[in-house]
Image (tube, rainbow, N blue to C red; front, side, top):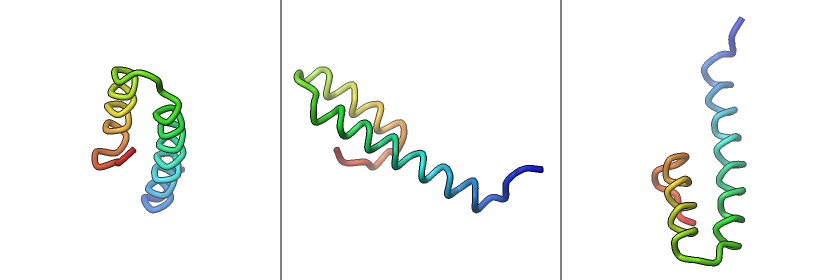
Length: 52
């Protein structure tokens, strides 16, 4: 039996938060502008309105 919609929504939110935290750390450590742009594009795929 599958999960109910609310628990799936919460799981997606937790996963998204963890992924964005990881991407923010990579963005802060990034040296070049090209690398930062690439990380920002990845973050936009995860969450379209994210600010890094």
